[in-house]
Length: 158
Image 1: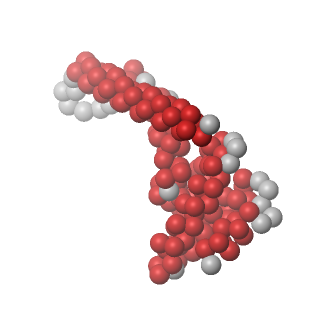
Image 2: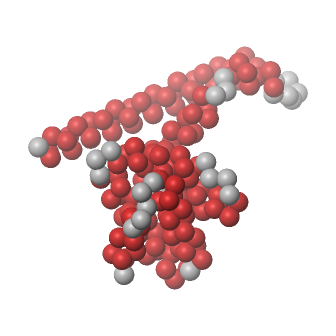
């Protein structure tokens, strides 16, 4: 039964938008039928993993994540956001999206907008700069580990 659902995921779906709609429908079924939610979520994970394993799969998953994130139809938006939050294939995208949103605003733009009694803007700025340095250090260290793991994986496939 799982194989039928997986094979059907590609039937007649040539573009990312169609695939996004199908995966949202699967997620809707997982939420709507509690008894099947674990099975359907596994099917979604397997489908995403199959896509990721294909040549250019990482780009396809990224395009799928962008399509899901840009979903505006009210009845689909919540399920699209659930997919992005709950499935491992989109974990990197969630981090990239968070980083993109964070980079849009600088501390210099934020501080003048803060209101409150006795705000020590200099201390806040120093705290923020320390946090930002540590955050990006951790992100870059994680990316370096991913690069090493990917290189090792490629070498073992040869």
